[in-house]
Image (tube, rainbow, N blue to C red; front, side):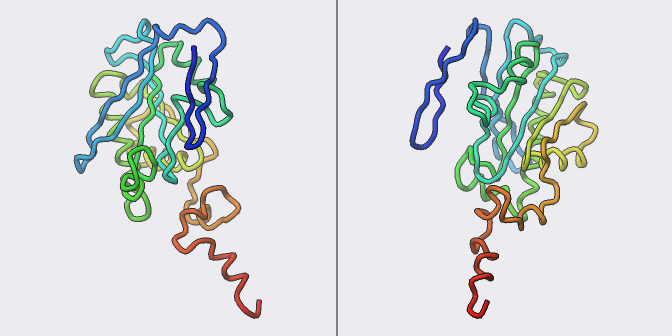
Length: 212
């Protein structure tokens, strides 16, 4: 089985080893409606011969929604593998694996990013909750079978929605969670933070003032 992994300047073909049978799996794109009417894309993969579509299936909902980046959950992991190992095991064991795309991410263009930062950051959290409610409504899972996950800035998302709707999720994974937002965003040693500063790296500017 071949997967094509895209970057802006390069397309890489990745070979999946083993006896992978693509015909056993379904990939879907669903759309949940946000409170303001915005449609939120949800990418879904599952093994069609295992799921029941009656609300009894377990589901892992992943979210990031930061730095105008596109989530890579369903195509490649950050180490370059064709599909994150743990997720591959889950999807072979009846789990739905879902990736929801939220404002401040880069999936739907520049305005999508602008609608999820600063005073509009709450949109990221409320849209994630809407996606979870939608997946329950269409019987892809239930509250008792819904797990959520986010890493780094996605951990901020997980921390927020757990506080907003603790009744909605059975389990949560917040990997290296970015939950002290002010301290984190003012630290230039942390990747991606300075790209969010409107005036650039103010610490370097102050250090270069005459007389310093």
